[in-house]
Amino acid sequence: MNAFRKVIASGLGTGYLPVAPGTWGSVVVVGLYLLALWAGQGGQLVASLAMAAVVVAASIACVALGGFAERAWGGKDPSRCTLDEWAGQALALIWLPLGTGWPDWLIAAVAGFVTFRVFDIVKLPPAREFEKLSRGWGILADDLVSGLYANATSQIVVLCALGELW
Image (cartoon, rainbow, N blue to C red; front, side, top):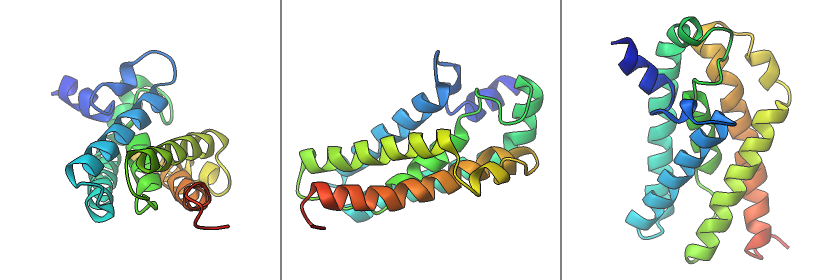
């Protein structure tokens, strides 16, 4: 049972990948986003619903397994627990402008990925304060704040890249 919980808490094993496991967790979510875009033929609704489902599922699992993750891997917000990155990265990708095809979809995906990673590392207020919450909430909350910042920033970046803002 502990092995199963470790697989889930590590974002299906992404937390075990070498060098920057949180980045690997984000990469998987971006891949799911692009898969949802492809499967939904570029429909923003399909991609956004898929990302909303990832936010909800990863958040619930992160809160439920947060205490276990801290005990299993030691410390507050252990790097092997990447469910928080899954939730934050998915939030960063919800309802981004998509343009008309793959090049535009890639712009949205890259913008969402880069901005989330930057905000997750920098942890602008109140993200750092939210890390102080107990167990799974402390693991998760800072990434959700970073995901919101990344989404807002990515909205602007993508609209500019698509020539729709200026």
